[in-house]
Amino acid sequence: MDSTSLRERQKERRRARIYTVAIDLFKRGGFQTTTATDIAKASNVSRGTFFNYYPYKEAVLLDYGSEVMSRLRDHAETRLQSGTAPLTVLYEVWDRLADENTRERDLFPPLAYEVMNPNPERAHTAYQALPLSKVVELILRPMHQAGMMRTDLSLQRISNLIADTYLMVALRWSAYGTERPLQDEMRLALNLLLEGAVKRDPPRH
Image 1 (cartoon, rainbow, N blue to C red):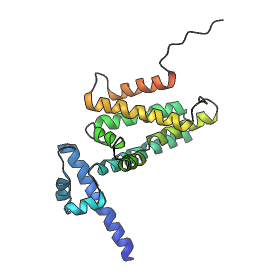
Image 2 (image 1 turned 135 degrees about the horizontal axis):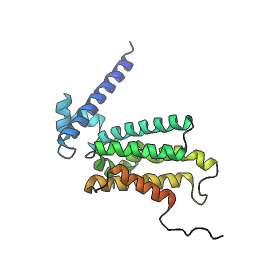
Image 3 (image 1 turned 90 degrees about the horizontal axis):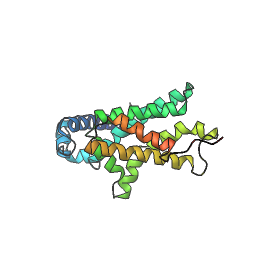
Image 4 (image 1 turned 60 degrees about the vertical axis):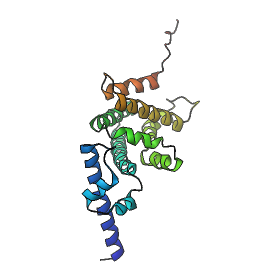
């Protein structure tokens, strides 16, 4: 067995163990109160080893968010390939994401804040790990190609605006809560984005 590939597999297993332990600690004890030392101790590694794999605690959440995005993209691709209407797929993805955020309500705020980190390098890393706008773009591309989308904005910009809206609405819900479930809040926001906020008079005949 090649020694290099063996070392790589060992590193992958160690990273996976640290990740699993960290997420479990975050869920049980809270993200803010869980320290890198807590994670290292529970993972049976040194604190330095933890930072070799995750340069800061929030980086663990980026792996979690990346997994969620991957599942959403797989769902979107499968549904689009089966002939499901793009807007139906978009609402399905929105509902799945809202369900995930509701289950892991305490994990979402620090994950969202990382996307808005004042450190440009960290914010860029978070944006790449959480490509929600790319999933939205994938879903809306058939409509764009069919001439069903507005033409004064690029598909990329439309997708970014939709993804950014999700981020802000979900962050506010996670931090402060409302009487509505997050899924209802997200559907309301998505309806507003797709249909507009200005009342339009019916056409005159």
